[in-house]
Every structure is written in structure tokens, then in C-alpha cells.
Amino acid sequence: MMVVGASIAVLVTMAMAMARALLGPTVYDRVLAVNMFGTKTVLTIALIGFFTGRPEFLDLALAYGLLNFIGTIAVLKFFQFGSLGASGPHPGETESG
Amino acid sequence: MESTVDFALLGLLAITAFGVLRMRNLVAVVMLMGIYSFLSAALFVVLDAVDVAFTEVAVGAGVSTILALGTVALVGTRQKRRKHSPVLPLFIVLVTGGMLVYGTYDLPRWGEPDNPVHRHVAPEYLADQVPLAAEPGEALAVHIPNIVTTVLASYRGYDTLGETTVVFAAMVGVLTLFVGSRRPRRGGRPPADDEDGDGAS
Image (tube, helix red, strand yellow):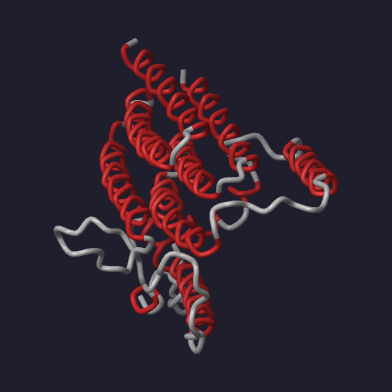
């Protein structure tokens, strides 16, 4: 029962994050929506593991969490500097390239 | 409950696909493609294809998003209006989809032991656990007690060798394209001076 409730809650949250990604006026809304969607995917995988009786996939969910974090950092770095290869400004400067 | 989750995930997948089709802002499209990747990965986990799901997230949501953003930074963030009418492509897609759905009616039932996939070469593999290196007379010269190891080591290894060859050929092709294209960039776009980093790695 708890798993069912949690699944419904996660699916509703996924739908709301999707709405923000579709409507979001700024790029940052969309980045945040994708990041949140990744987190919800992690939760979905964990829940699927529990209601199919195979929670071994939890480590997969953990790896997804790490990938999601790194991906978001990369995307935001890209938005700030315009490329991924640039070393960026020195500490103290706030200008982007 | 499981099928409810399946339908919800598939519904979200369809919504994302339509969003990708309808949007003109390419940055938003790239973000939606990331969401699409996460959804397909969740569906792959539902289908028990965990390794495919992992690849989908690492490549689809991780690397592809970055590569697509790099492309968008070079080509601009607005999609051009298309000039031709979408009727013919839509027709082709609908016909192809209809044919695929029609084809599924001919599929054997899922999981039956008499399906062709279980009748083809699997009985032979199971019967003699054959090492390919063995002489004809001594069929069990390299006896491997585990059948999975037998198939992996004796047969699947050739498959992997073929895959590696294809990946190697593709990489050589891409590197060949990049060699000698060091002409100066067009101005106007944000500086993307990362040529030394990612071309060779």
C-alpha cells in the first residue's frame, strides 16, 4: 500500500516536472525540471524494484543519481561559459565568456 | 499497479515526444530530450533490460545532452520554419507504424518454450556445450561446466569482436573527418575554443 501511494506521488511529481519543462519561461526552469525528472527516475526505479520484489536494482538507482548530478553540473557550466573546454574565469571575476 | 506505472511512463514519453516536435526553442528541445532519455531508461528497467537502461542514461541523458548543447551553441537556439508540408512524412510514418503493428499479430506468444528463438541454435549449444577449439573427435576437450560461460566464451566473444571492429571503424572515420579541418571559425557565436580537448579523446 505504501509503495502504491509512493508510486502515485512520484508519477504526479513527474507530470508536474514535465509541465515545467514544457512551459518553463527560462532555461533555468527547464534545467531544474530535467534535474528533478532525473531524481524522480531514480525513485521510480527504486519503487519498481520494490514492487517487483527485486530491490537489487537500487545500486543502479544510485548510479543514476550520480550521473544526473554530473550532467546538471555540466549543463550549467555550459550555460555559464559557453563551452566545456574553457577553463573559465579566475576566482573573483564573475564575467562569463 | 505495475501496468499503471507502465502506462503512465509511456504517456509521459508520448507527451515529451510531442513537445520535442512542437517546440522551436532548441535549448528547450535538448532539455526535453534529456527527459525522454530518463523515461526510456525507466521503461527499460521495467522491461528487465538493466544494462540497456544504464547505457541509455549515461549516453542519452548524459553525453548526448552535452553534445547537443554544444551544437546549439554553434548553430543558434531558434529552429527555422519548415518550408515543405508535413503531410507526406506523416503519411509515411503512419503507414510504417501500421505495418509494424500489423506485424505484431504474427508474433508467437511471449515466453512459449516452442518459440523459434528457443528452437534455433540454443538446443545445440545446450546439448554439447561445444568449445569451438575442439577437434571433431573430442567434443568436450575444453569442458566448461557453466553453460552461460560456455556461450559467452565460445560464441558471444565473436559477437563482441565484431562490435569492437564496428566501433573502431566508426572512430577512425570520425577522426579522419576532423583531421585537417582547423580553419578559422565564423565569428558572432559564443567562443567555443575547445577543439584541442575533445577531438582526440
